[in-house]
Image (cartoon, rainbow, N blue to C red; front, top):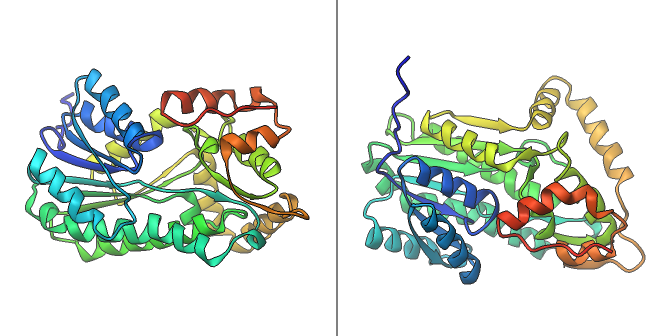
Length: 320
């Protein structure tokens, strides 16, 4: 049997949100397939650490620190790519934030922040990159949405609002670019063990919210190993697949939503009623590593996710 040709060898990729977590793993997977990779994230220190890790593994990599929600960021990023590597061939829009809590604890600004980070920023970057992608024989755009961009999970409303918008833009852009040679792949990951529970922001009763979210994001039956996810994402993009749904639980949820939307809505409502309320004195924007100190969740429950987070640059939680 002949091996499938590597369409990405010798190409240049830009991966946003790549100083840690899934973005770092996608960047590593692309580098392993022969890509030159530009990393991008807000924090210069974490970005430098990620660049060092990949260089130590033999990757041809560079990094550019910027706030992806800054309207000037797309041009700055493209200039950095052109100066270091030349034309851009592959864009992976991965940057994101997670805000967890009941709807009564969110304000309009929370939704604006989510939309800027996970919808308007990918939109502006995609538009800025289109000229390069159209000129490339391997022009590829990868949109990392979420299962939350297909099914509106409770206590994640700003996140799912932005992810629904990102998914709609990505799917519509694929249709608009049909015949142009540019491939667009929309990815709908379920929960993955990246340590994201330590970097998420929790509202309402942070300890209680951390308890359910960290459990779901860590246990093997509910979450997926992020290394396997990154390989699947890059493979789907290389093969020009229009979409990819990751984790068995996410695939079941999407199928159920399609076949029985009323039943799915009732289950989501029941889930919302079972989750913590806002509490008498709601707190706001408590980071996961701090929320862990106010949680009754035993440390062993999140051990797999915590180990993954340490490997992938996430902050370390301090359990009670």
